[in-house]
Length: 167
Image (cartoon, rainbow, N blue to C red; front, side, top):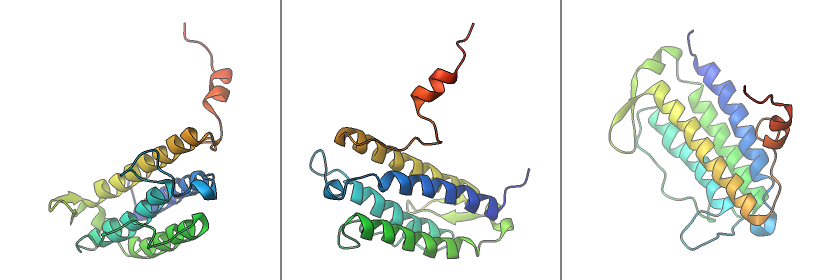
């Protein structure tokens, strides 16, 4: 099977929509809440996803250095503004991702660590990064006592009820 940039973009868009759904569940008055000092708030997490996608991944795929320098409230403040910022950075990134030809997926690009990595592996790291921080959003929602949407349409309780016990 041949993996194409379009395959990645379709999958990434679905992953991003899952992240947006979770971020949208954070109450407005808890968007900048942290459970202890020097940790990400939900707003920090969403801004971090926005700027790393745009200023690390989209730049490195074009052979340019990271431009990620901040993820604070100075970039966007308030749940709606932060989610709009996430959407804007995502669109800018997608515009840059779309210019990467399929044959470049097996070439190498720079990382912020000063090493290089195969482009398709670097794109996979973007997906893992997104999933990692989405998981943190789920954990923060749990700490806040806020119900979050099931990841793929069913809760673990629903999956267990439909399951058949192993022999």
